[in-house]
Image (cartoon, rainbow, N blue to C red):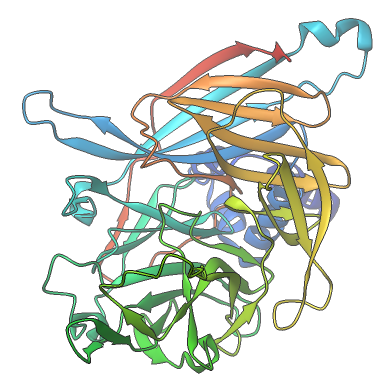
Length: 442
């Protein structure tokens, strides 16, 4: 192949940086020069930047985690990551507005059995949680010892080592899950990806009715060092209460933004009464809502206030962290964290809206200025609400239960997580099914 001129090479970089990851993986086989270009760290960074700025354009990718029945006789299921590529028609011609469609390409990626990720919990439910995502890399866990990082776009998987802190947990050898919450993100200072895990700590029984719950333990894994290390959680404790992340069934677990991970949380008393019957006139004080932030650079926790909302979900609004949920009037609020940031910032209500359809549970949202896309779920139907058109799109989902849903706005990237002996890379060929779903105007 003749050597390209500088101008031609720059044009090729501009074109390739706008292609999906799947195409780039195939183009690496064309020529050694293409292979070198696509593997170049500068090109990977440029491709990621282009993908990040693609949100709320004519092409959006949403990642869903679901279970698909593999064997009807045994009831065994596969963990499937589904990439929903949504193609929007941005035609502003009002005369053709009624003809708009949502074109959807679905790509299913089965998590390799060698990851040994899925397990059945003590209640009989399949446990695989989508615990965070950043730059196209997704963090999955069975909420015990198994943690897997994967890039669905290029089909790479990495099983993380088990930590000594987890193995020493008093709950590890019982049917109690020692992991309270996890998060995943990018450390802007050390230029590496990290996983943080918050663990249950020992409980001290004073008598038959009272128990002291010690502050949680925590640890951090770095993709560069490939090991876990314990970190301090002192900032989660204040006077007689401790901030604990909400369990997955009550809130979406974590969201990463600009080197900081966020969890919905509550402040619980350090001493708890197990068996307690209040007096008739006594008012029971509920745990206070709060937000926990974790700075990946200095590996410290912070506790912030939180809007009084139910069914909370984090999202990004103008590249800032935002939170949405139902207010006391059953309308949907969107709040944005102010510019002070994640140590002492406060939440500012940006808008309130009322979708014309019932959304059983919010899953994800992203917004810019006054335009946003809201993803929710009702039974096994995913609902996409577009603020531009005030229309809802409905997409039936097989293999999704109200307990096991997860969704995230996904950034297609070619960022690799390879390294170590526990890596798996699947064949880049996968089954792709195309669908076209008409808009439902409401």
